[in-house]
Image (cartoon, rainbow, N blue to C red):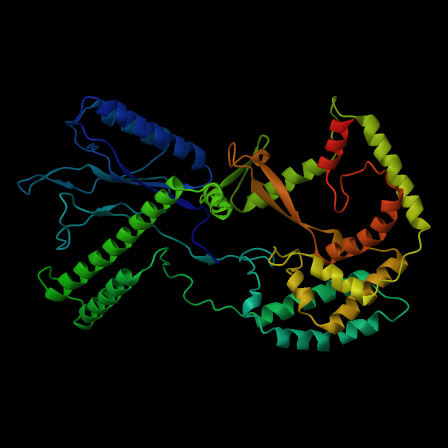
Length: 497
């Protein structure tokens, strides 16, 4: 990763209103106010570059308009610089009349802008202007955990037989370690999880070429044919030395096929929108699958990225946003004093916790067999997000018989020593927007935590043992958190009574 300058740059393209209408001055001031807000918000952390048609001649001494005065006030207050480079507007008679195109900038590394003349490709009534920026390109140091997002393993493309064979061979050493009297359970667990993750990812070497190419969301036979025609026309034009004469037949053919290609794409997009509208109009309430599809599409929000995060009265920007999330969710995890909180209920919960802990100290754990391990791994849904180790339940399911034996020995050893390593209690937290409020405010997000797969397997095993005993002791009126029943059954009892 490379850093171009100390500060990132914001380039704003503008076209300020002309003097043709009576309310143009008010619209002009509104545009200046918007520019002022952008500069005030980002000027401290970014270099601002504004370029475009300002529709005002700043260097004409006879121009004393109030628009020019307001524009100069903005430049002075925001410390914007510019320079004169000659007349840029051409009238209908082909005569240069005024200078209304500018670059306004705060970056001291910007060189004075220049006017470009005698360009055969320019068909506008403005002379183009250019701006050069001196840049020092330096390589940034990347930490081990920052940067590229980890890709999820696509198990339909993984050679599962090779994965199982590799796991059966590599896991033998860890099975032997569990037979020792003194072992570091946390270290063995961490190494085994890394083995699962690394083995799967090595066998799922996804191709990276072509990812930066433009991907079309629509495609049909007409688009395919027009695309091939456009490629052929471009190839012929390129082979002929890229002629720039607008009367050249190859250049005309290239432009015409490109236009046809874009027209075919737009026609297909319009057709799909029309069909989608008809689906909504002719929607059948009994078709639940289509209903859920419409709901999911409605809830999808393409704009999910934020440039700054507001945590109470503090603002976190760019790479510091992750620290803002850390601060926000850390505060939520700390108990706070609230006058309406039921502290008596909290005291009862703490007593229950102490009682359960004392009982568990005298509880003799049962030996976990391979059948229970099999049921536990199959009970977890597939296709879910990967945990903090970068593994999903598929890593366990396809790891083979030897890994199940290792898993059985590891869990039994944890139960014997009454030790669950802290590493498997660590979840991967992701902020999810509530679809209401300001998306830059942390209070409008709730956290979704992905727990380690190994912890879920252990929870399933413990739940089997606890449920068999709790069903005998719990009240017959207890309907919640009970298999094959529902709180609705309790509501029927109340209604009948």
